[in-house]
Image (cartoon, rainbow, N blue to C red; front, side, top):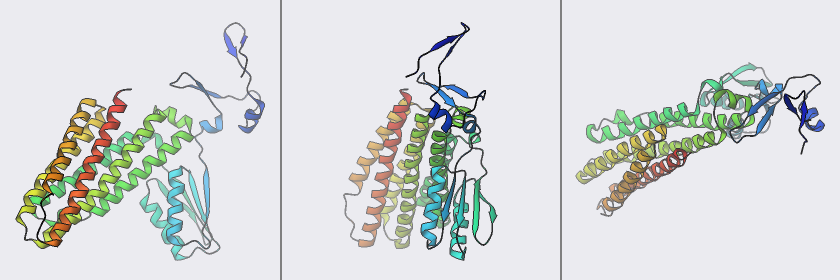
Amino acid sequence: MRRIQITGGASYMITLPKEWADSAGLKKNEMIGTEVQSDGTLLLVPKDIQREERSSKVIIADNVNGETLYRRLVGAYISGHGSVEVRATNLNNEVYNSTLSFTQATIGMEVIEEDDEHILIKDLMDHAEIRPSKNIERMGVIVHRMVSDVFEFMTSRNTALLEGMESRDQEIDRIYWLISRQSNIYQKTPALCKRTGLELYKLTRHQLVGRIIERIGDHIVLVSDDMLALHRHNKHERADKVLFDIGKGIMELFSVTLSGWMKQDRDIAEESIGKSKELIRKIKKTFEVKESDHDVENSMNLFAGSSKRIAEYCIDISELTINASMD
């Protein structure tokens, strides 16, 4: 606890703990930032933190296989490090290829130095310019297009519509990694959070919603695979109508769910929850009927499982929307 003193009758003064001031590198007559938080507390921000300098991470790649190195690079990226350096006695092709794959799979990270013993990767993005809400919106647009293409395939049987589904799912993953990265950066860099005008608890919600949309994208890929499997059989009339009805329901449901989240509208969220539960009941009832063809039966069960999970994920997003709307 610190005792408040009055100086000159116009302002209040408290002393700072010497141990903390030394650890923050503060000197006599140096400026320190002050930021009022939403809960009424006052945050002191040393100038080094105000410059938004972020940490660097060194990864030793000796005796590490490419897959392990890739995972560590992604972990360093999501943790929020401003730069990552890969070091090895001999940077072989496996190390180099894993590093290159990492830069291609992430947003903002670029190689700026490299030689036979090290590769330096740096974040060139201005995170204040890219809002988590915009990232969520973009993820939603990609998923909606994926759902629309699956739905259109049910009527046109144009297999080209389902090509590249995995690539689009990877793009969703890239954006989700960025949201997770930004969440960590904002929590570690108060000045950046202040610049963007974002509250930390709102960032947590965006990360939760991003994770759910990322999982929906995974299930859309599974649904498209099931659709192609059924298409190859080309001998089941009931499947066409069943899948068309369920696919249409998924497309409408996701549109309503995403709209509710973007608008922070609890009435739309309640509508989404109702539609989700209705779709889940419909899926359970529809797929109670067993198929005589084992391959068709298996593909339709997989389709039903993924469709049900998508509807359940929409409920999760809508519940988060209701929670956010009550602020």
